[in-house]
Length: 281
Image (cartoon, rainbow, N blue to C red):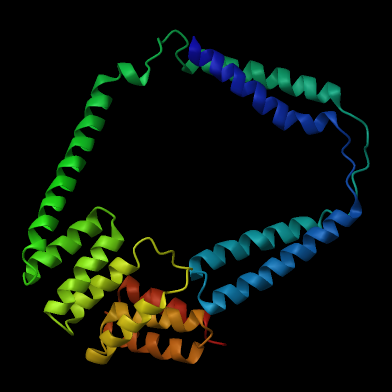
């Protein structure tokens, strides 16, 4: 019964939202269509600039461009104001009656209005799984805390510090992970695997469109100086160059990356798309 009441309330809200405009004047000023077209054209230009700089991914840019073009086309067809300024209460009433009748019929036919409520407090199996998951997470956190305490007395244990860094990464604690990997690097300087692990920890939670921080760029350049064929380092450095508008440098990094990636992999396609996005820059 409670579910039926909630559904009735939601239906009323939806009807008020959808049918409200029918109770008002439908006249729209001509200037609105022209304003919309100008906005969409500016957004298309801005999207092209972002895509060329590598700020927006190729697939995202293509999808956004199609949507903006669709809106622009719709705005171009909407130059004339609507001719009717009269209110349409009769239409609204008829539509609301139809919607309520159809929705109610479907619910009575396919739904279960007589089904008793089942609040979360009564869903024992679901609550048991949640409790178990939380208990496991608590246990893992305790194990990592114990490992951190152990490593404090073993500053020269390289494998232990790497294990601690990976554990913090799994727990989504990027600052602690970076600190652990940085310590591991002091034990094995110039090891590109350790340096890239530290890089990934520093970039955890970092959106693809966000600028790459300077400390990460410095670390990546150190990696490339040691081994110029580390794929992730070449990708990030190319992305950083594109974000800075240094497209020649970005092309150079990504073309090198193409040379070290499998020729038929998805990564190769991604790099090719990135190069295509900056080909005229």
